[in-house]
Image (tube, rainbow, N blue to C red; front, top):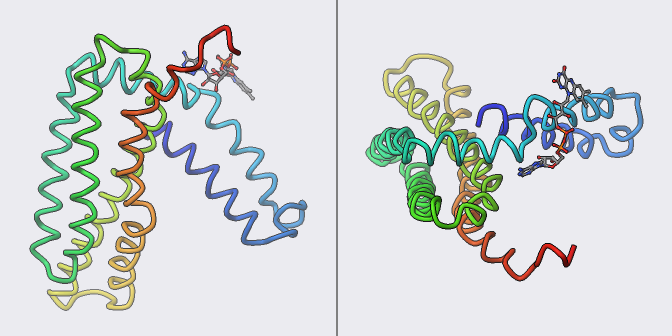
Length: 202
Ligand SMILES: Cc1cc2nc3c(=O)[nH]c(=O)nc-3n(C[C@H](O)[C@H](O)[C@H](O)COP(=O)(O)OP(=O)(O)OC[C@H]3O[C@@H](n4cnc5c(N)ncnc54)[C@H](O)[C@@H]3O)c2cc1C
């Protein structure tokens, strides 16, 4: 997941950087076009994103019947509880909680169908990789917000900086976090959506 998701996000970041600079981003002067070209290979070599997704589902999740993922979900729910105990952080905790519910239901679906309908499950492997990456990335930001809140409560550190960490986590939850719920649906429904396409139709 660290390889698969981070390399995909690296491409998104370069893409955004070009957009921020407009036409100057597209031409060579800023150097970003070169960074984008360089980043484009990282989702391909050392395991393409498609293969990383298949590996995550097959060799990591199905093989051990989701054991590690279940442990992760316990940790995620504990962070949700800590966030919801703090008035300022409760909105972050509520979105994270929805994300964890989505992960849990997608995981149940993968485990329930992995044996009988592996093709349908693997059709959702890349969406699963993105879903889990977006969730875990948000989780780390939420944990940062918790640490910042503790420092603010103890009247330690730079108040502006610490508040900006909380704002960043809240921004992420509103913009990216909510996508996890839709991605979990995609995980479970892509296989069915592909069924009408026979191989000889390609
Ligand atoms: C610049 C560069 C440097 C490289 N350096 C090295 C090196 O040092 N050592 C080395 O060993 N290799 C190296 N490679 C090779 C690299 O590891 C392969 O290009 C990479 O593994 C992808 O394999 P492929 O190109 O055959 O693509 P393919 O396997 O043909 O894949 C094409 C597309 O189909 C998808 N796909 C294929 N099979 C499946 C499947 N079962 N399920 C879902 N999707 C699938 C892939 O995700 C990909 O998007 C390098 C490649 C490049 C371009």
